[in-house]
Length: 253
Image (cartoon, rainbow, N blue to C red; front, side, top):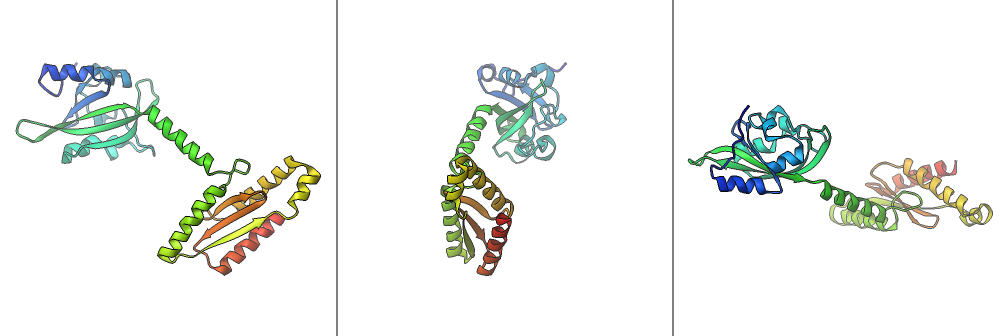
């Protein structure tokens, strides 16, 4: 069984690496793992004796990106750093020894021999679960802030952002756009006669119908009450009239 070897030949440096809270491992120019610290053992479940002497391209940790692409074969940050000496940072997923995926933030840097040649690389990595959870919560909060709670489509704030963006494109690039305003006829009668719960169901049905009858590039939102707005990029007046009539008929039917 191969013995663990620290990248520096200085005992104090090895002790420092062992004391680090961040996981660290090093590879030689052939991407053979030469060092694996205690924090790496804790984070991945793999002991140093499991990995030292093996090549990271053996896909032990099976690093993948957010799209599930295997980085060890198609875009390994360590390999790229060994080839050009550039420090790299990335957010990836590794496979824990127990089999589950763990998000980690990594930083890869080149190691140099005494003659200045690149002799390998070192990777420092840590659990990225908390920061990803925070990012997910921020994304959710932003989504909720820009989404109408009743209908699930864009709210007025989001529509105003889209209108500003379309106006900017029109001013700068001369790209036309159309704005279609819709409201539900006699909506007050629905609420008065059938009640507000039925009124909400009508609004939800209209919103879903408008959304499903437009293109992905169009923005459908609730302007307020029973009023809806559809913002259509790259459209002239004739196209807008045809789309408006088509939506009116689909909703009416």
